[in-house]
Image (cartoon, rainbow, N blue to C red):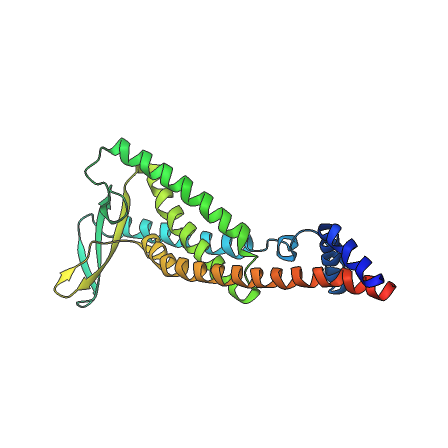
Length: 231
């Protein structure tokens, strides 16, 4: 009779029992009941991210200033025979020459909107990066730092006179690719890092779901075990 009474009462108060069971399980593992542990951790990611951003932007601006002072506009100098050259040009188009046929005002609006959206996305990634396993968080910080640093390097110059100083050209067979700069290299480097961070995020979500399902199962069992012991 006692067992029948226990089963009936647990079915009537199943939601409350699961809640109590989860709280009991978390207390056993030394975790306070409420928000996820990862959400309670301090967000230290902005420290290394800011260091990367400032380093890339300052290096990009410094090299652009040196090229502008030392290399005449339009000059082409091979610094590594048949591989790398300094090719000083002023690029008033966007990255990879996108929307080059649009008026300047339209390109400026597109650049501002794209920059705002990118900053919001990257800001959100830093806010969520601490949910990744500790060993994988540096990949998120490096991705955000290189992407932010590359955007800041070019946007900072565009804010002054819209055009960007490009100077670094690489050989592709018998052709020389259109020149870029350090900010462009940082943006290109952030692309494979973005793929890596996405993979890490999906893996972390799978692990969290697996952990939540185990916790849910334990929370259902715990109240019944407690009631049986008390009876």
